[in-house]
Image (cartoon, rainbow, N blue to C red; front, side, top):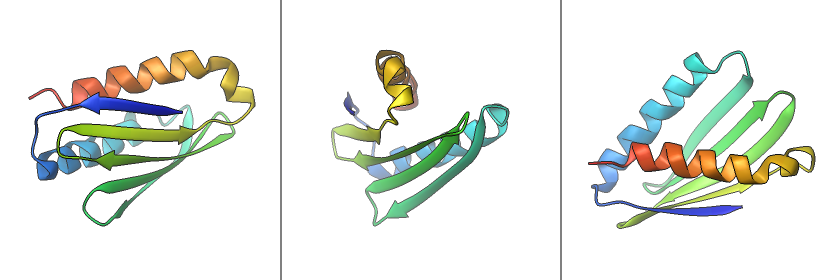
Length: 99
């Protein structure tokens, strides 16, 4: 699954906001997210691994100058909820990059 979110922020600000969002997700969703790991590859790609209700998700967010490109591999069982997952990503990343 791929989602593109336009933005007008500096890359450093986007990185900072993504790091803060990951920290918030770890604490606010500890009941449903049993594992959340994030790793920066260079200055513009955030690798993400998370386990939600026993399902493993791998993804990445590329921080480009005018957009975020989020890619997520969705486990077969979770593919039943792909539309809801996509809309959640669009909503959360969209709120994250509001100036």
